[in-house]
Length: 162
Ligand SMILES: [Zn+2]
Image (cartoon, rainbow, N blue to C red; front, side):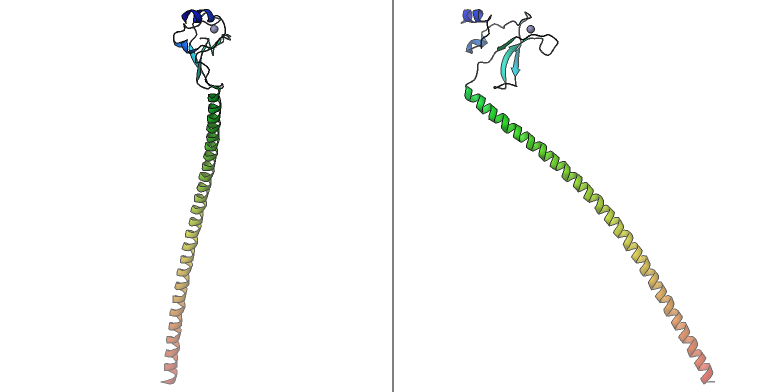
C-alpha cells in the first residue's frame, strides 16, 4: 500500500481509502499541501490537497483529491439538496421583502391615522366652541326677550291702571 502511494504520488490520481496513511503530497512549489475543502463542485465538502499559497499571488495549479470520489448517486442527492436550499433562500428573500413592504404600509397607515385623529379632534373642539357661542347667544336673546316683556308689561300697567 505504502509503496503504491509513494509511486503514484508523482502522478495525478484520486487518493483511495488508504489516504489516511498517505504522505502529504508536495505541490509544484515544493511545499507540503494542506488539505482544503471544495464547495463549488459536484460533491460540496469534498476535501483536496491544494497549494499552501492558494489565495495569494502564487500561481500554482496543483490539485489532488483527498477524499475518495463518492458514488455518483451522492452527486444527484447533493444537487437536489442544493436546489432545495436555493429555493428556500430565495423564498426567504421574498418573505423579507414582503415583510418590509407590510411594515412600510403599516407605518404609512399609522401616520394617516394620527393625522385623521388630529383633524377630528380639531373639528370636535371647533364644533364645541361654536355650540358654546350659540348657547351663549340664545341665553342673551332670551334675557333680552324677558327684559322687553317686563318693560312692555310695566308700560301697559302705567298707562292703563293709573
Ligand atoms: Zn504551490
